[in-house]
Length: 237
Image (cartoon, rainbow, N blue to C red; front, side):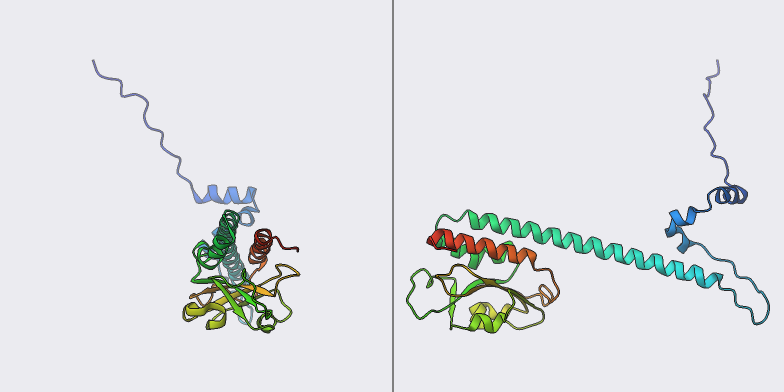
């Protein structure tokens, strides 16, 4: 007995040009809802006689340009958002390391050593001004002591200074200054009883830090450092 071959496979109906035209007539806003298709269409040109210019092609080309520009903006926004999220995650990890310090020496080591790794930098350091007195908790490994007034000389009236494509200053970065091609300097206001200070971050990437870059995250990190130092040294705000 012959085997029943079963139902024959369904053949998709052939889409004709008339079908497309009918659909577009019923959906006149189709290209508005799907502007990415405009770049794949070839607009018709009409010869309307000598001295008459058909602007239709120019209008479509302008729309194509708008679509390309919009796509470029979207890609740039996505790239920036991902970079900001990555920076935020790194700052959060750095804050946890600072809070986990078991003593003041470990806190200073975290600032001078671990922050560079956590923030994907080449050099990180803590800089304080000398007040002319021998303060034991200032003269520790990883802390660079500079002359009074140097903090304002570097920062002026600003709390954060970002510089791209710039050489590192040995007074800020010590032996690691030769690696620095961009830097972030963040003012530290630890206590009314301590001299001026700053965090110095350096990278060999000349565009790692640059003017106009957001400073909220590094500012937040500086506030955490201030509070940690005050807590370990039992200092007032």
